[in-house]
Length: 171
Image (cartoon, rainbow, N blue to C red; front, top):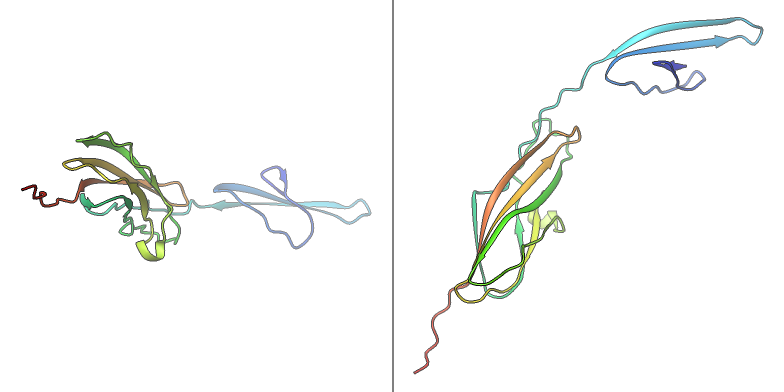
């Protein structure tokens, strides 16, 4: 057996891997007494239809008040794929971040979160405690890809502020 000029195996129980487009399959038979015959067919494999996914990073704005440090989560569960193949690749990235009141290292976004609790496509980032009157504005981007390499992105702006506390009575 050969497919498109390349040997593909032998025997009468063979599985052939075919590519999209035109494929020429040749079967050769030898009766061990010098008799050889060949048969050739052409099989056309149509491109599998695919509609790309639609990323959904949640609302356009997320405000987080912190009283100390801890992990916070992003929600990509609104993402959809019209083909509903059951498999999408998710990736969260911090594409822009500014801080006011104090210098804050860029937040690192990871996929290390429990989808059973936080939903499919969740992202996680660690927020250190902030000084009074400090805040951080981060643009987080969700990049979603289907098994065919089609992808889509969506962004959410995350504002992290310290929890407003009543002034201390110093009298």
